[in-house]
Length: 613
Image (cartoon, rainbow, N blue to C red; front, side, top):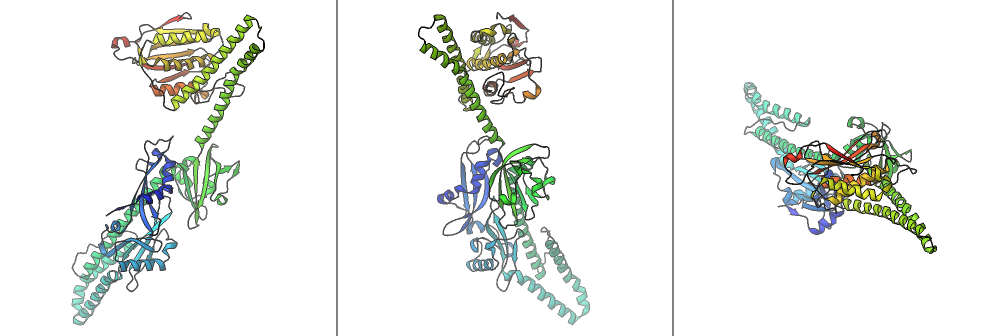
């Protein structure tokens, strides 16, 4: 009996707030089951539906869901009619004053609509609900507001019971009790005393149960099973409390689901009442303010959130509807950059503050600025002598042969430097885009070391004497892609040469790892080492130990970041061993080729061959 929403209705709901929440939250924040909410249908005939929004395939925390799948079920008569009519209760759903779904007849629906109109249900119902007692032939009706996932009212739920069934059992019981009392009094007082206890006790138990229900205990039952009027009334009473208890449990479960959704939101949310006192706060907002729930609930919102824009405190009352950049100042002096949106509650008795953490956005902006600055500097540096010497060669055709050779050599060397910058950018872009394909094959570790030593002695003759080689004897071959491993070693050697003065040894080593199941290929220098405070940002993109504008060492700040990403993607564990004054060692643990005998995995001492290799 469920009526699914039509394609046009789902299309109309595609821009709803629940879709925006899923798109903004990502899979790890929303959850694989998506979000579910009650929505109001638009069109010539009003209606209510349950809408489920499920994120598209493979969302990640860094890349939120690119799409959302929508599913909807219309809340119509067939849907509502599934509930049993225990105790004479009717269940109806309203949009405004109109009943859009009910398990009641047409006449009863009209009565509920008239009662809703008199009670002005369309203007909203308090959180505690609204109950209209039976009057004449009008039923008793209890109204509660149905809210969407964003806590906006979508419709009203009405629980009704006909006046006849509400009052008939009580009237019959009172009439029977009165008649019994009159007859018993007229016949003999002794019989009244004898049977009085049997008559009064059920009523007393029924009254006691009614008091407990009034106090909020909906699980109480009278326990009376007689066939008389009191027994009938008692069973009806028990059925009523059971039905209300089930409905209350459903409402509590819905509230718990809403609380779970709010808790899992990546954006911070703080709700305050008309006096500015915090009434609700989710985990994200507590994390931004570095507070515990007991430190936030019940306190003024301006004390919980120290929001400042340009050093000036943000006036939340005056920022309604705005989306402004600001910073959350914590008690420990740290700050969190955010964007603040403030919205009043529908009843005007409070406001909601939404905080979106923009730390990542600022980091991306910083990286972009650093990238443009570093790339422009690294390309301009070799271009200046290239252009200068090229112009000299063009303007002075009779230049001496030795000068021509010198200038051409400089142009070639600087173009090689510029080409390395471009190659590094292309390699980093390929890794970021997931276009790197590692084609592994068995390679002797000594070949990897010797190839890099030969390349760097040719590339930097002035430091050729500083390059050393230490390779353990009889090392088994490794299963790697020599091209990509060579690129990683080039960046490690380049880093060692840049940060060590001439005359400082830079050694390429190869030996079995401590576990004996891999070959450790390392670049070790005898330079100044790296301070512990600088090691934290060692592998960040566009970060250098000396990040000042007047730094001695150039570069994009991408070399070590490139090695880290390549090592992670290819499965070559990267480790760093360093301390101030004792140099630094960057090592890659490479897997052994398949079929290497166990006896060849025995650790052997390194063989030092000096500068001659």
